[in-house]
Amino acid sequence: MGWPRALYSAALHLLSPLIWRRIRREHALTDARGEGGESPRALRLGRIPETPPGEPMLWLHCASVGEVLAARPLIEALLSRYPGHRLTLTTMTATGAERARALAAARDDDRLVHRFVPLDFPGAAARFVTRLRPALALFFETELWPNLLAACRRQGVPVAVVNGRLSPQAFRGYRRLRPLMREALACVDWLAAKSRADAERFLELGMAEARTTVVGSLKFDIALDDKALEVSERLRTRFGERPMWVAGSTHEGEETALLAAHARLRERCPDALLVLVPRHPQRFDAVAALCEQAGMPAARRSRDEWPTADTAVYLGDTMGELLAFYGAADLAFVGGSLVPVGGHNLLEPAALGVPVLTGPALANFAEVAEVLREAEALVEAADEAALAAALAALFADPTERRRLGEAGRAVVAANRGALARTLEGLARLLPTK
Image (cartoon, rainbow, N blue to C red; front, side, top):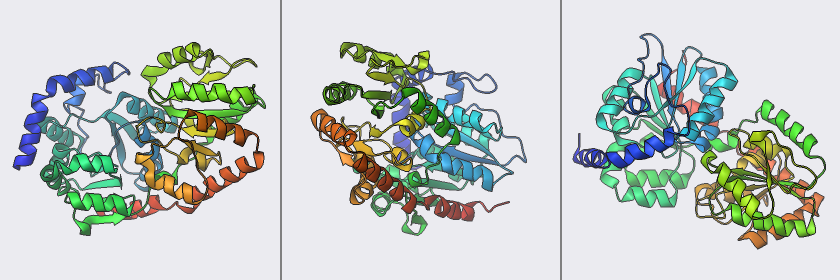
């Protein structure tokens, strides 16, 4: 173990009381026990059932909900391309775990299983890789865990970073740890970067250029779920002809602005309905209270409540239905962009042909935003007043709504292909059997 990773591991052990406190909060949100009844602590220490000999295993790690959703086309393709393999999908967060389990349940395929990723202590990482025995390890986007990567290298497991991205903010943080990142990236056999800018940031941290390929963003290869589209049709029928917009993946501090924008909109469109979908389930009750305080009590999806003609807000307080809500909408605002979060996936509504609106904070999707902007397929609003004005203008102009939706759909169609290029690169690490 080099000195950077030794120092990093020592720091993790010193911080372990805080780490375990965070883990307890995460696991309180979901049933976190393993298939064999393992406790959350055991799971996070890599104490998982061993993969039986002769049962080939692929391993894909995603951080949370957004990454699981973005990785879905890759997950489907891997299970199809390698029918003799099982696929373990790991997540860090409880919300990511719920999305992963819902995906596995929807497939009704016992080859796809979810586990929590172990904490990156050296022993836990080594134990997890030893017991899982993967034929190939895939880390999605920015999930670079030095001890897990080192455990894969020691045990001869090929490693790929797929849809690799490093935002300018993340890059500044990693750059301060450059010796550690250089050691970690030396364990990566192939980096599939989503853009040239992302590739250059990885290269500056120490990734070898010969093992780096720019493949594009997997987010453009978004899978449109037939079941979600059926739900969209039922929702639209139930909501009727009311002007309806969705605010998806919203964050603390953002809903207040969105409710204020909706109140302004209703001065011009009195029957407008806002479908509000918070990013994190632990905030559902708090957001419902915010709606009450704003004088717009919400009908709640989780309680099977439906908006009446007087209802201004419908709260999407369930997991895994955002795509269905987008598909039922006239307009879609993508959250995390009116607060300094960096935005969320602009391509989900675009792929459905729904006009996309956003706030100014787009660091996490800068390249995607630029592509949409160049195609005049993105409406950007600096604050709640600008958002209300944009919503009112678009509801009054069905021709412009149609143009925006078609332009967004065309952008997604024109930029597909990252999945095929990713699978081609992975085949060099794990030939089809």
